[in-house]
Image (tube, one colour):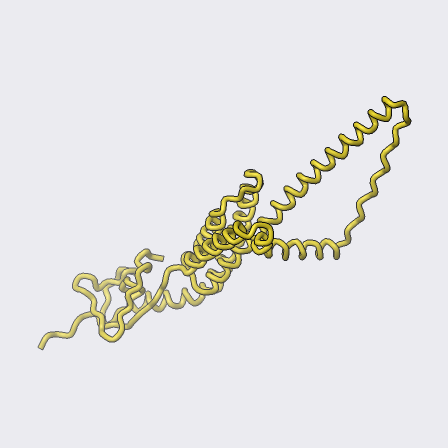
Length: 254
């Protein structure tokens, strides 16, 4: 849509009149006679105003679906980026990354809707921002848990190797390590249950951090709030109003 829509100037309580030399439709450029409308600050003929009103109504659902699609994609990108940076920095998460995720989600949704926003867009953007930031804790936890497990296994192998060497030097018969038990197979039901628990744990992660380090946990929640607020403001979109009809020329002086 035209950039002139970004500044709505509805006038109530008095008639509006076209200025001389400007009585052409801003959209179709045809001369106007009789009445005209205003689409925000732009002058429009009755035909263009009605066509635009109809297209807006028809495009509402499609625009929202596109906005959600773009927003979900941006949330996934934000989640991956947040987790990767935290892992590369060895757990030192840059706090303002939450703000960046909010900006990415809000901007992507407005790109998908072609600038159409509103309350439901804002709610979706806020939820997606929170989900992306909170769920990023899951791959971070898994990474460092695996890293710690690998270190423990390496230490255990070193201890077993040293024990075998000592037994060989002392002439004792080395004790063969007991075979490791096979990992139990997980059924589909258990996998689904596990994924559900992991998702709930991830969504609660901003509050779980409070128990570990209250100060940094509170700072993380505060910055997450700012990220959600940015997504909320961006998803408001640009206002679009159609006003009229108005007279196309002032009345003749007596």
